[in-house]
Length: 444
View (cartoon, rainbow, N blue to C red):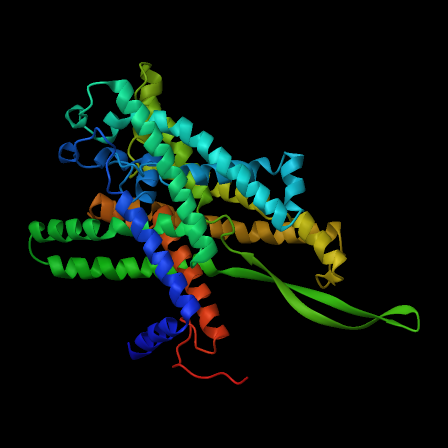
């Protein structure tokens, strides 16, 4: 504990790091404050529970916004339009030559892609906003909560505020990335997820106490299991497969290029290179079969009913298979093995025992496929753990913290932020947060 306190003091001693930390916390506080502000024309006292917004894709969106989605907040859409725009731009980069050209232009190209993403965010918000307003009744918002008599007045004002809220959330995220600590968008998502933690945990404690004796022991066991899942998630997020690479050192001697030695390095291929995207894609598609249950056709309704319950057996079986498929798909489009092989060849690098060029690309692709399979299976296990926890009697909201998108995002963002803080500390001759020793001066 003393070492942790010492590390906190060291963070506070570095003015640049202290300012970044204060700015980051301040922006996150602003975001959470605005998430509590309801749209004009909504009576907050009439809002019920958000139970109807916990399943499928709605559950993801509601978790990402910290409950703002189900409470008709001005931040109801949050950073989701920006995330959607980023995914669209990334996928379009595979087929649109102009975006591929921007990738090769360095910083100026990235700035242009960011500008395209911003404009696309506004367009997506203009599509998602009316859909959200029209679906409020399905999110548990009763008709008595609407105070405006004119629907057009409510629609126009809500559209303006929802669009403004998403743009402001995007601006906050970019400012945190530029001036603060970590990835701003990811931090805003994480703070929204964490905001739901206290209420979920207290509801679980109350539920166990009302169930009878042994409540304390059960709560302790659940906490131990939760920490075990967090440790497993950390391994999933940080695990890499190192591919050995050798670089030839060349020099011009007497007008001739000669090899004078070599240097060894490695290419880190992550066990879960796709991150949480396979879960998001799979859960978005799993939302579609559930709609079949509302069909007038008896056959379609019979097919769709098993997929209405995200804690059901068939839902999770199909969900898991789709996660594996999307893991391979997303990894293939985000890790260009051909480009990696070309870069190695241009840099006089090669994998020992493998010819440069096409053979190197094939070798990297094979290694990546073998790494992705266990990574995707591990991801499936984490994705279905909330359903397992729910079957063991945990409250629905509390069970969601035992895996899935929320936990992976929290762990990933926490690790990334800690690494950035550690880098600042080490640059100023202090031990980082990942170190176990006390503060020491490093030799100049």
